[in-house]
Amino acid sequence: MAHISASMNSSAPPLDLGVRLRLSVMMFLQFAVWGAWFVVLGRYLEVGLKFDGAQIGQIYGTMALGAIISMMIAGQLADRVLASEYLMAIFHLVGAGLLFCLAQVQDYWLFWLVAFIYALVYNPTLAISNSLAFANIPDAVRDFPTLRVLGTIGWIAAGLSVDFLLPKGAAETNQPLLLAAGLSAALGLFSLVLPHTPPSGKGGDVLPFLRAFALLTNPSFAIFFGLSFAITIALAFYYGFTGVFLGDIKVENIASTMSYGQMSEIFFMLVLPLALMRFGMKWVLAIGMAAWAVRYALFSVAASGEPFVLILIGVILHGICFDFFLAAGFIHTENKAPADIRGSAQALFSFLTYGVGMWIGNIVSGYVVNAYTTVNPETQVPVKDWSSIWFVPAVGATVCLVLFVLLWRDTQGKLAEAGSPTSLPAGEPQSEPANREAIKVGR
Image (cartoon, rainbow, N blue to C red):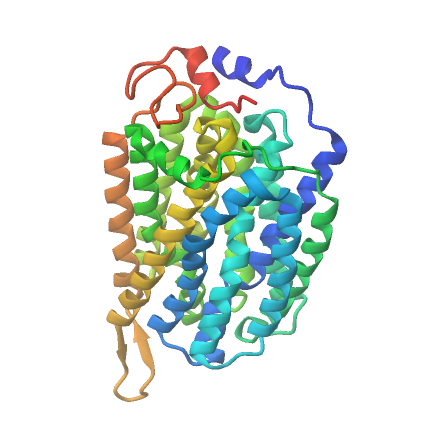
């Protein structure tokens, strides 16, 4: 308990109220844009546009494919070229136009192309918004979760709007895309009043991308990033097909049902600092991985006819799944990366998780869904074996969890430029004060 109280009594100055307000609105809109269309798009593609499982997976995969291509470029821009608030404005205003165009498209290949171009401009804002927030807060462990929770609230508000503000059945139409377009335009304009966050790197260094990759020469960082990449392959099943799953089992308000996951995310985001102090980064990440495996197992069991409450529990587990894995991963990356390539290091983590891992996962999940889909010979209606479908990512997440617990050891302090720790080697025990510094952001 002394460890916790000492850690919570931060010596950093309080976050300015005006800065907090602007960063909070940024986080709210950043995830409201995404939440307005992402969870219900699969239902629109299946019912409204008659696309099959593989096509749905490939369209969801455009978001991750865009991350693969754009994330590192965005990190370099934020570190070297243009102020972060201007990048946010440009990307979101262009994104608003693309979302509006996407709402008009019905051809599969044209839909895929426009969705891919949109992914190229939205994905960089995930890393840039995190980097902008970290650059303007005194203490990452104390301040970032209370800002990031506004993103969760934005996602919830967008989901509730789809079910209760838009006309009934809107989830199976293009209206969530139009809602997202309006929110993106609002954020693009609002970004012009965000705190000025100029590039932080040295002007002569034009390759922060390569330096960020050099962090992988450190065994601890390589295992952390490698297993984060691997488990996001399993994570993609949830984002791409939970909405389709809920629709197939006759859940009416899909977006608001899935918003229970974001509601729990609010609680666990606020608990995250205490969890990091009490359990340390390794066990927080392990708990997050375990929650993914449990969620898919519950879906698999409930799909065979068990009570709906098991599915609801699986949705509510999203708070632990996201906060204790992805949000904690961003904090760990911020704490370990050298100061002048933090934007690129954040982009690297997003590249491997939201990017490569999610892209492969979306493609794989689409083919898994098709593999377990049969056609009813009497009605000619496709029938999915959801119990088998959800069993696949449950096994994948469990394997990643076991490997992570066995292989990963955190290190003290930041990583040197070549990718090695600045002090203790991987796996060497740390004292309590050193552990505490390892989860703070030293600026």
